[in-house]
Length: 335
Image (cartoon, rainbow, N blue to C red; front, side, top):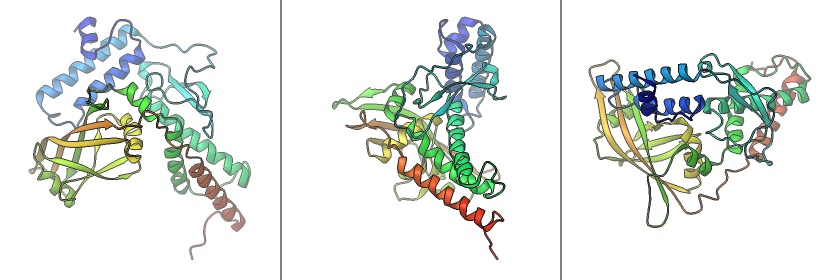
């Protein structure tokens, strides 16, 4: 394989930098991940090997990214109403993903732009922002050192809830969706329609696996409820099929807020089903055609500021710290 073949395979040009190359690589290789129908077939394995080889060649050709010295200004949209600043992180090089070698390029109330900020680094930024808010509450309520007032497992519950609230302050669902994907069609009313790949999977235990194993290509399944950013799916008889897995995790942050506000409609159609009954435990997976249509009013939608939820979480955490501090041992007496 030569460089031109590698560029064609990854759908990049000579002008694309290594950040674009890596993004295209991750999107393309995702079609051949273990959840994909047919991913264990020879042709799937061969295609994945070609994609990896193309990525390796382009990495070697493009070298590494050197950060701009003294860069402090990030070119992005600012949400002045966000409750806090967050760090913007950038990888030092394409090889840094596993080693997490990234640096802070800027800090502020910047909205997430998937074309400029890597998804995994955006998640790290929000996690760190949530921890900073909790650390500030600890200093306020218990001093700079609060010992073991709240076990890490208990603190993590607050941090996880803060993460969800903060993420929505830095994401514009429709604008982000436009940057991640292009509509496959426009209907007669001018509504954008997107087609995504999604998957359902299960093991040979419980009712979900049994229900999934009965699915056939052409069957329709339906979103039943939300658990955080997860979509629970059921069949026509309202039997649970478990969680829907989108091919691109970034899409959850665009799709779920719009669905919750009923600013989008979906249609889920089974494309293929693969059931392995001779393994232990038995396994099943189904490829789903995910039809997603933006409704009228979606363009002007901005996710809630989440200020009340964030304030409530921080107040409850502070109250918990003060109670534990007053008791002196940092833990509830459960005797």
